[in-house]
Image (cartoon, rainbow, N blue to C red; front, side, top):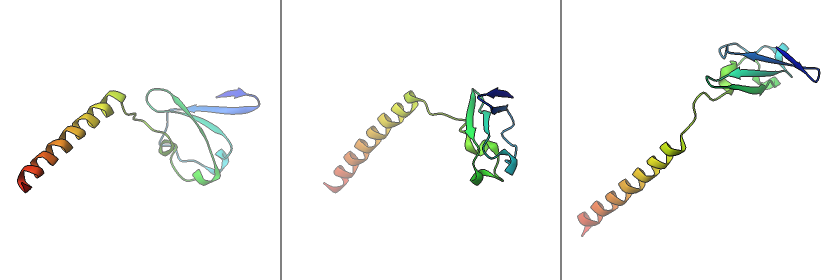
Length: 87
């Protein structure tokens, strides 16, 4: 727990903890497996788990590029096959 500018910042690795009404207005730093992600608790979040407001997985730019290239190739191949079947 750290105190900055009269605000309490709580660091936790427990993403399975339930948000209680006493937590409203506080900032939690929740560990997502790589770094601590700050989450400001609002009234609408009460009753949910802390982990439902952080992302634990990220997409790779290389992986998304590879998928786009494969998709374009498959699309071009399908159009070629359909063109041969119709003709």
